[in-house]
Length: 76
Image (cartoon, rainbow, N blue to C red; front, side, top):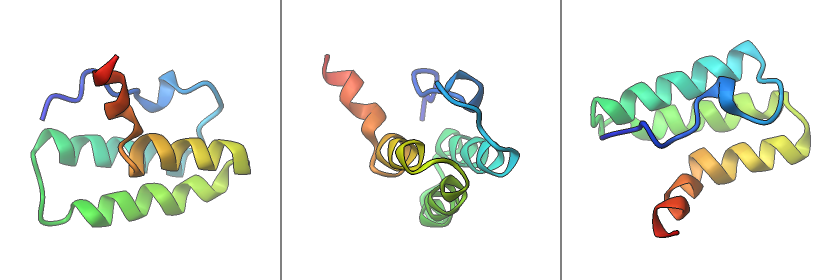
């Protein structure tokens, strides 16, 4: 899958802790490999690592990455 339109950790509008950065990068790499078998594990890791940021940023990360909020930009 082409992930070029999905925000990278360094592009997020808040400071991303190393554990969340790692989880997001691993998820993006799994999408790029079209890995379907373990995708839930990567999504779970992002969701768990997002707990290390504020509640507002945690909700943003879950909405954008875990709930595929980045796809909404495709409809614009």
